[in-house]
Length: 340
Image 1 (cartoon, rainbow, N blue to C red):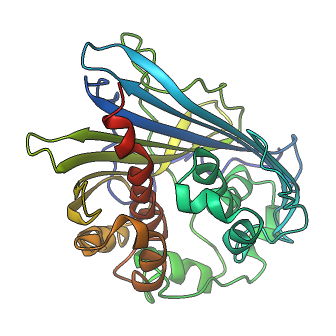
Image 2 (tube, rainbow, N blue to C red):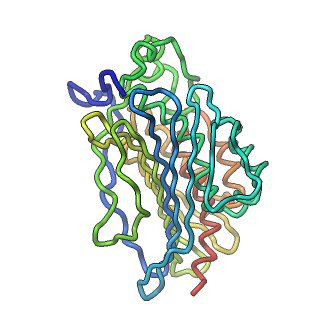
């Protein structure tokens, strides 16, 4: 891509940025636990605006009581998306889903409905392939950061586009982001360098990921599930990170949250949920943190839709909502806790 890299601040970070306390490392794989990790990379050809290429990987591993870790599932996704038309040009997943053709489907609003129509069992089973498919809309959305930060849009970045106000804490009316758009000079996120999450001493902690190219982006997730001393209670540790590689090859963080929660394994009811913001783009964004407690009392099998229906507005965050909805994958991991 060409142009001035606006994501590489000449005069330091934006003075009104949000919290910058990124996670370093990853919890060790504990005996008796199950972990799901996933990632979606967003890349474009050098200098191009469209299309964006999405490349996803996901994996489940189980760590036995003797500390032995075994892969119990994996999945892959490759997609080509027209960013501005918001249309899927091509999409394939492995393992292959029979008769699922999502070419021509909307890439953002309407995509998940198209997936449900084409392969309804994937969401119901919280299949690894669904974990990747569920992130296609948000990957399409956040991939736009690379266009604005890289400078490839040039003056088009100031074309008069105005996002919907009050859809989340960061877009609150009168806040930095909305004010900058209204003034015709949209603010560009300047995130902190991304500490490594991989641990050489624990090589199975994450699935393998290729190095990101300059102006590439990645969303990665982790979900750990482990029984508590109370046999009916399961603890949940989760996180996600969105990152962008600047022109100077530094990987920086746009969003990052961690989450601690627990669920009753017998009923599927969430017993508690607490989010910890690690990296947020703007000073208004922490206004959404408390919304994570609102999934307490919800069941895993209703979480997907209730979060989308009930958590909206300036007390919430689109990306935190994605993390909260991903807790529904716990339903697929709990049965693995009791297998040899």
